[in-house]
Image 1 (cartoon, one colour):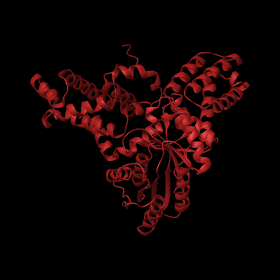
Image 2 (image 1 turned 120 degrees about the vertical axis):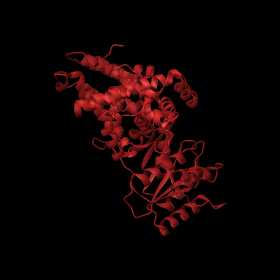
Image 3 (image 1 turned 180 degrees about the vertical axis):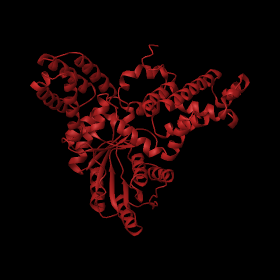
Image 4 (image 1 turned 30 degrees about the vertical axis):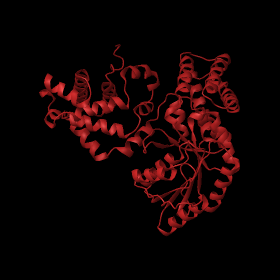
Length: 463
């Protein structure tokens, strides 16, 4: 998300930073481009106007124009403006799910059909179970869409979260009552109620959701909306806010929308915080929305905190420490490389993770040439898994006939097998160097390993 906006703003600020001093005309010209970039990213016009006016007022001040690095000061002011736009108030950067209520806490999921309510319900249940150690019950109130209740049941099996058994002919309000009763009797902490949607907003939908809300008395009413619907998502959010009363927004398909204007608009227009983002297809791909970190991503500053959190959730610390010690001693094997690739795949979308690294926006062309994506990582892991244990421990035994066998077994080519082995040698060499350099070499080696994985030339190599 925000890819096109990030590119446009990056170009604007790169030019500003090159100038030793800025005058009012420079700032006004830059903000005109910022305005166009925001409009092209599908941000609502009133939001754009308010944002640009605020930034201009702050930017055309003595402290900026006389600053040692005026370009960087303007970037900071724009960053602060984005944080305020995304958070509603200065300082209210993140907004967690409210569970501060007597159990079972009801969470009502509302939205239009096709917005991703059921999948988001499953993702949220998994997140609350794993991260917050809550006992969660899911209940489908969608009696209209064919197989909707079965879909939630399947998600329940995949996540290990119980679903309320389906009673044929039971109406949504009755299902909500039964779910809350079961939640109370069986000691559940949270009950997630997945309501029905429509292809468009109508009175029947709103009345039904309002009745369910009155019965369940939810601590959270989350509007699930597709980030790719642009300004329509803002209209939907306003309608639900007025007629049902929502407490937060969950954006889905964030990974599929390069513009992201809906996210920038919805917080400002509705006054409701964006609380969650669906960043991929896997059930683990649900993140908290944090205005500071999202603003950082838009301006190409990365999101190291988000990357570390994602790693902490998926990577076993003890295993990682053992692997690091082994690698730094020069004992890195293809088996270790396969395990690292597996951990990388667990963390989610590779392209999304690379976007969390500062300055990676400028490396976009190199990354595209290197073809670093989920399929490439899966292919490399398949090649290693097609080797025998002996071959993984000692790649020197891999002669031409063995390489042909591995290529055939993994559905790849001999060239791809050779490329992987070359990358393994490079990574192995880097690990040894990192061991000699100690902590100082860690960051340098880590970035080089990522480049080596995709066959990219090292930074600054001129290749």
